[in-house]
View 1 (cartoon, chains in turn orange, brown):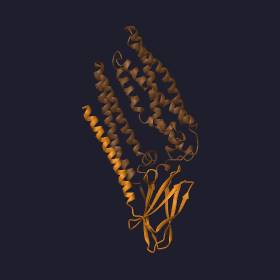
View 2 (cartoon, chains in turn brown, cyan; view 1 turned 120 degrees about the horizontal axis):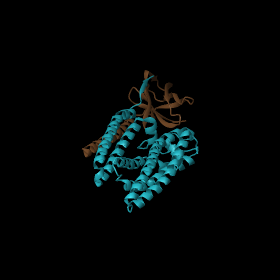
View 3 (tube, chains in turn red, orange; view 1 turned 180 degrees about the vertical axis):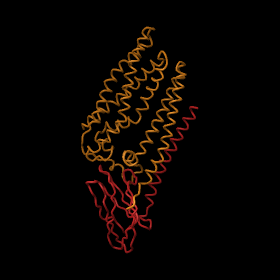
View 4 (cartoon, one colour; view 1 turned 90 degrees about the vertical axis):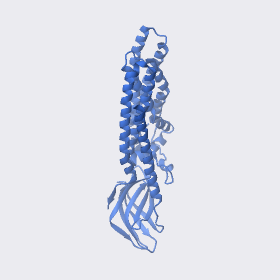
Length: 134
Length: 263
């Protein structure tokens, strides 16, 4: 009876380790598979240092084609986890050779961290930027 | 030293543990030396001495187990007080080198201390304290670990100062294959704390049951009580393993996606 229970414990532990490692690897591979828009950049980050918030970002489109921005995600680099994300109720239209302000209101770690910001387009590509806080 | 309620408690627990450890060590040494040649009368007197030693060791080990848990809470509370620290990595940088050795030690002290506690628990339930000599010897074997554990706590919390430190962003960059364990577990995926603690306790209970099994097989008087203890320990271990497995599901969900809100 004793070895069987101990064996079950070891199996449960192995399952948990494999599941956790697989989930994390899947997350990292998903992130590296994102197609980044080469001619669209995040050109300004508006921060509220009192509330430790990323209020908004300015996105500049240097290309001759327009894009529709549908969602945003913020990944904390040190942990590799998406700490905030949002879907825009009314997508933002980014016309060619223009800049728009996208409100985010993402909470930042007041102690400090580095983040990747992904703004997703309707084509499934993303505009990537990074920020170090504070 | 950074004086906060938690660092003070950790310092007091360290000093208290150190003082009691020295007292218990002399008692354990005395019992170990005398027990082999003792007459019946002396054995009875040593048994009484052992009960005092046992009580003191229970206080020491339980206070060290409490300190092991408080270690993480205290370090977390020091983050805003150390410039540049974003997680416990920064706190450990400020208290280096004691903090790093202490962190490593804190991960497995529970396993070692629990062996003595579980063996003493069954020893108390059997007439004549058959493990009296063994437990005194095991305590002496645990002594270096116990001293290192308490001394490192005192050294770390006494020397840690609010110096500017480089934190985990210097080591864990976007290219790192693994995340910063402190940021990951304590800040961004705290459900993993439940998973780690549950599995840690489960493994510890299995190890303790193996120790009880080892001494129960060696000592016929302990067989009945020992087998009963093993059953309870393993059942509890299984319970914690199941709890850990259940907690893995929300922990993985926490990692896979931040709650998206509609803007």
